[in-house]
Amino acid sequence: MPRVEFAPGAAGARALDAADELGDLRRRFELPRERGRTLTYLCGHSLGLMPRAARRAVDTELTRWATHAVDGHFPDERHGGWLDYHTQFAAPLAALVGAQRGEVVAMNTLTVNLHLMLATFFRPSTKRYKILIERDAFSSDRYAVESQLRWHGLDPKDALLEIGPRDGGFELDSDRYYTLLKTEGERIALVLLPGVQYLSGERLDLSAYASWAQAYGCRVGFDLAHAIGNVELSLHAGDADFAVWCSYKYLNAGPGSLGGAFVHERYAETLERPRFAGWWGHNKETRFLMGPDFRPIPGAEGWQLSNPPILSTAPLIASLDIFRRAGIGRLRAKSIELTGFLARLVEARLAGRVAIVTPREPGARGNQLSLRIVGGAANGRRVFEWLEAAGAICDWREPDLIRAGPTPLYNTFTEVFRFVELLEQIVAYRAERP
Ligand SMILES: Cc1ncc(COP(=O)(O)O)c(C=O)c1O
Image (tube, rainbow, N blue to C red):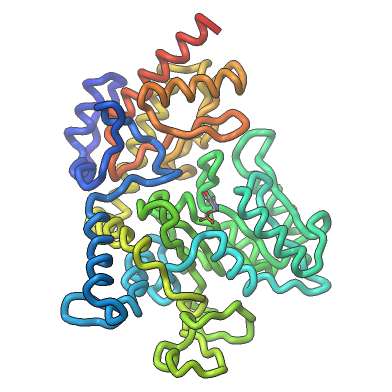
């Protein structure tokens, strides 16, 4: 988008909105309202807004169910049929994660996919049996990893390694990662890291993390819950072994919608790694012969278990269509501007009262800023509650962080400006009346 001189005022925000060539996309979303006002929604990192076309996409499937019943599975002149419904997502998802079509599949939900990937890629031996994760890993990832270790008869106290942030801050300590690989690399079977860290908003250089670990013979997987649809990714070239994601955050597919997985092409035909199998992963030509031998579809599709939930998947069509029109490159460029605007306003107007714990460098973060209100967690929590009451929706993460993420698909610079004004008023009011 064209550059407009930074002017930290309402007029500057309006000028940026006027110059925003993606501004029209906002009209494609339902904007949440309360008591007659449109809320300032900066919470797409938790649940993305509903694309207006989602209703029609779901309705199409309901109508098909009503009119075709079991025949709805099969293609006709108006509909591709439900048997191969999930395959329409491969190309757009591959574009978002930087993969080949056969490397991605829309299936299940994130933690389920993580377990499926761990079943294949975590094959502990007596020599190599440890898993390395980040200390602040999302709880479900930790539970999944610890339960896998136990399931293999291993004790997480010995077999789970963690790297924390640098110097008591929030950025992952990449030096420590490298040192740990040097000392423990030959005992580490698998590394699991996030694309964008959910708490701090830090974006990791996935190719670098993958190649360091692979140099020691470790398998590497990524949790892209906060990365897909938020930042550009290049999983294939970056050589990740696998990745998993959900689609209800940046992909705006609705609560509990279908997640996805990436499996690198080099495993497309391999049968030597075990997997948990189900009929939807079986060769499509012979699936309905119901034979006893499992023959997987080559590529990521071969990790599917069940036929997908069509009704909760349909909104993904509407959302991915918007991504296709806008292009992740242009969205990311706007996102950098939008979040940069938020960061500069907070720094200019709230210095010493609100700290940004997310990395300053735009390339090292996604759209989210994690804010810590000076004056303690209880004060921070009250500020968050007042923001909500005033119609600004972000979220609170223990122990003391407010996460605010302006989304290039539907947020405006004016909203960001209003959010900071509101935050400033609330912080000042609380400072006067603690
Ligand atoms: C980083 C991260 N990992 C995993 C999950 C769990 O996702 P699911 O409930 O789809 O398994 C979430 C959910 O918000 C998440 O943010």
